[in-house]
Image 1 (tube, rainbow, N blue to C red):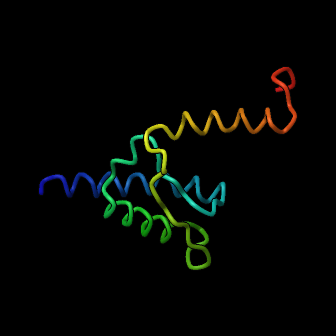
Image 2: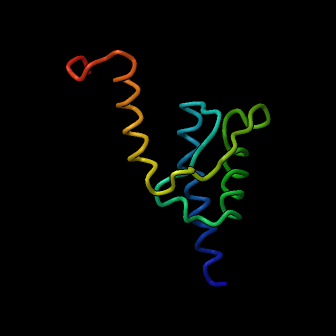
Image 3: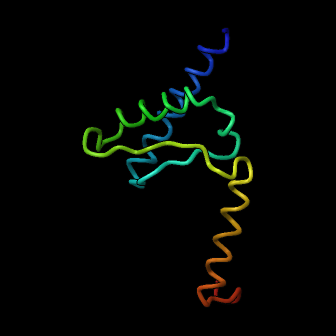
Length: 96
């Protein structure tokens, strides 16, 4: 199909953008959320392969990439969880 070169280009550009973040933060897992959940699984695998070839720890570390379980609601639920964590840790809104 005509969309294959477009999706491949998007995936390569996304991988390039994520390499710096992965090198800086050294995550154990990478979740793709928000609008990224619409990326077909074959391109998610391609993203994972490109990312793991380009990171500084290539050959020593492997970072799995998966779609976030909450889909497009991931940013909202992540924000809520951060606030709830602080509240249940004994902090009040005045100390935040």
